[in-house]
Length: 90
Length: 137
Image (cartoon, rainbow over all chains, first blue to last red; front, side, top):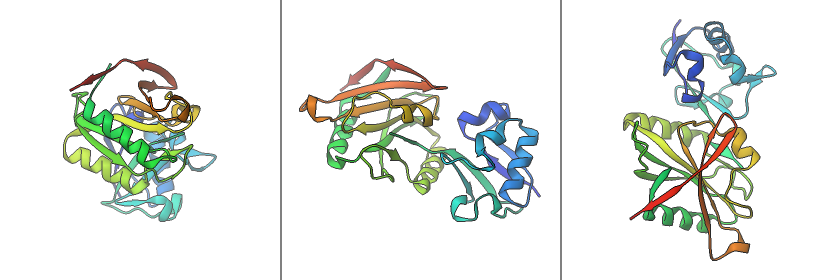
């Protein structure tokens, strides 16, 4: 099962500057674990204490995973995952 | 240095005033690699707050898809401060995640009215560097 994951500029140092990488897993959590295995350190930029970081948005196809079940969101072959840091501030 | 047209400066100031007391926000896009502030795109502040701004998550995805399709990049990320100076706050620095963008801050705080402040910064790995703003016709 292969899923295309779109990496934002700020996290590309972890992926040798690749804009998108492939990962496997049947849930978002498994997918992130797989990403971290291949791109060490990436997992920590996405998760904090085992939960998704508040100011990192992850989408499966067109949906924000916060509305799909977070780390438990199912992913399947051919889905595309997009990671985007929130644009936010005070 | 940031080069920006007077029209965009005026539009950002007008948006700040229109959305007062909430912070307003938006981007200026340009062709990839050009660092040219070519296309102004106001965004909705999903936080609707005088002390915080955040692009709506769906709008954010749509924005990145749009710039990918158009071979554009985010040249400027701007927002307003309605009660404080036009320099990055601690939260601005903590969440800044576009190392290639110019972070523009506009302040419409009352104590300097009718003047406004319009300043530009680079925010990279938590380090803030102010830069010159050159306003073109």
